[in-house]
Length: 246
Image (cartoon, rainbow, N blue to C red; front, side, top):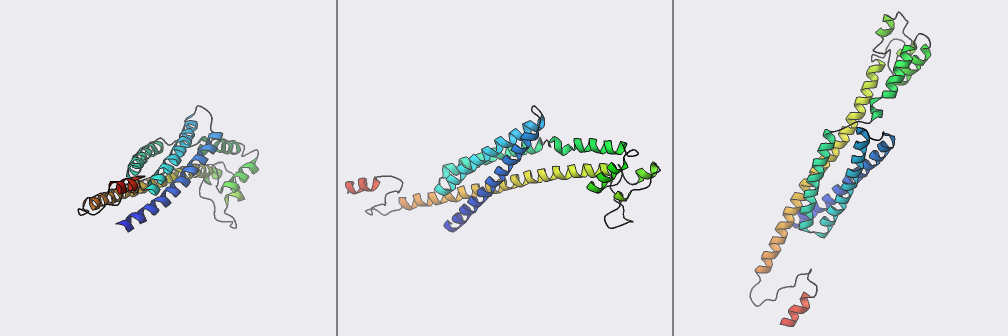
C-alpha cells in the first residue's frame, strides 16, 4: 500500500505541474485576447474570466501540492472540493464559449467583399488574395464562368496548369475560423480531462492516506501492556513528558 501511495503521490505532483503550465497558458492567452478585445463586450468578459480562472487554478495547485508533500488528509480533501468547483467553472466557460472577434474574420470578410466587387476594375487584387489563401472565386471557380471571365492563374494549384482550387475564398474563410474555434475548444477539453484525472488521483490518494493513518492508529492501540509506546513525531516535547512519567 505504501508503494502504491508513493507512486500516486509523485504522479499527482507531476500532474499538478502540468496543470499549472496549462493554467499559465490560459492566463497568457487571456491577457493577449484582453488587449485586442473591445471593452464591455462578451469577448472582453470572456478573457477577464480566463485570467481570473487561470490565477485561481494556480493558487489551488499550490495548495494541493502542499497537501501532497505534507501528507495531510484534510488538505487533500479540501483540494478535492476545489477541483470539483473548478471543473464546474470550466464546464460553464466551455458552455458559454465566445470566440474572439478576430476569429470571426470580420476584417478579412470585408477585404474579400471589397476585392471581389472590384474584380473587373482591379483583378490583380483578387488574384493576390487567391494566391495567399489558396482559393478560387468567391464561391468557387464557376463564379468566373458566370461572369464570362477567364479563370486566372491564381486559381490553379502551384506547379499545375490543370488542377484548380476547388474551394472558394468564402468557404476558406469559414474553414479557417472553424479550425481556430475547434482548436480552442480542444485545449479546454484537455484541461477538463486533466482536471478529472487529478480529481481521481486525489480521491484515491485520500483513501490510501486514510487507510494508512487508520492502520497506524490500530497499531498503536495494539501495543502490549508494559511496553512503552513511541511518542508521536508531530507532538513537540511529548518524548520528554513520557520519560518524566516513567
